[in-house]
Image (cartoon, rainbow, N blue to C red; front, side):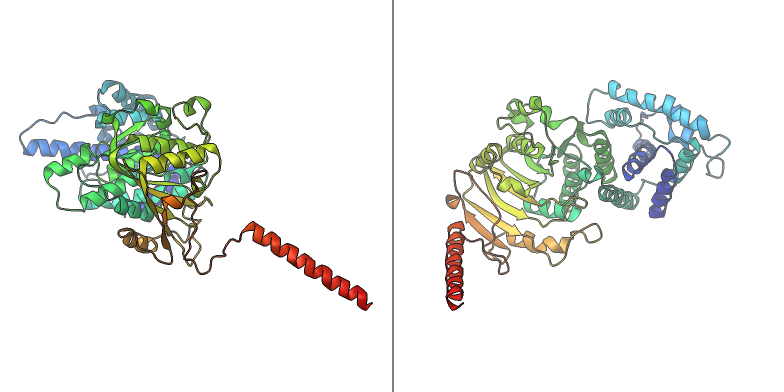
Length: 484
């Protein structure tokens, strides 16, 4: 039922002049879903308070409650169309009254970790793009049919929302920034292996896929006590996100997966000078796929000891700095990071190898990220001791990856298993750091075990062979002339 509802909502948004892309569909669905979620959350909290003999103070004022403006009901429990706003009246109420009211929650909240602050932040960043109040009424009617009350309902909703984010990533434009394939994230989480009590951080959180998967991993790792579940809810997951839409999607995704008030801060992570990071700011685990290919301004670069315009390289410096001693990280980055010969890349590799144990590099094939042809690697490292040896795994698949043929769990199963013991195989090998050229710190992926991989020859050997062939050709021509 839920799946068909989502499809019907997309069909309505598609015909509205204010929505032109999959990104708009996700954004507009998100704010309506959020208000319906909030209504169900308030009902649950009110019921729980009554059962325990306590009083619950409702967050939303009566005139702005879902049941007042969005879905007033008649005696049969159906939407009362005589009371429900529609057309221009509905659009104007949402734009002129509802959004400004919800925006004020941010100013009235002293703590960014509260649901009140999240309400204010979300509706400060979003706007209603639906130009037709009649289309908006149809969307609200469909969303009103959805329920967030039971675990099963929330679970189904979270899967559908993930599917929408994936579609947005596949749609191109800048949607792909927000979506990292979930099988890849799950493999990274398994290797990093966070524990209950770890503080887990993503400074480029996007749709919050890493934090959601880490939450699922920890939640299913054992039978959690009430105290441990509260730790997971409030003291485990932390994130930052620069872009407004990604911020909203990340919050909504975490909420739908069961994290009530996500600790996501809407800010540009790179605007923070990393020399200002104190011990209290550090984390046990960093999981991230920072944006690559961006070019940061000179004033942003001044926040980092290694100056570079490449966004991902600045993020890597930030992640190294913000890890606690003994902290673990799994970071996706372009594979050119391993071999670029510019000064910034060399300096950054040197910093990584000297301050952290880069124990594993996962080399991914092209096509892992739909719509992006770039090749990437995943760096797994632990802060506090220098690298002695790097274990490489080259993921070679017998098919081309793409939107209709994505990466799956089975593709990464061997990597996850072999990584535990750093076992050599046709796809995996180890490199002693003592054998790495300290002039370049080149960490290129060069699989010595590939049977079908062409061996790169020494340039001098090739030149010598060319000279030899030229000599042979000259001799043949001389013999032909003599015969003539």
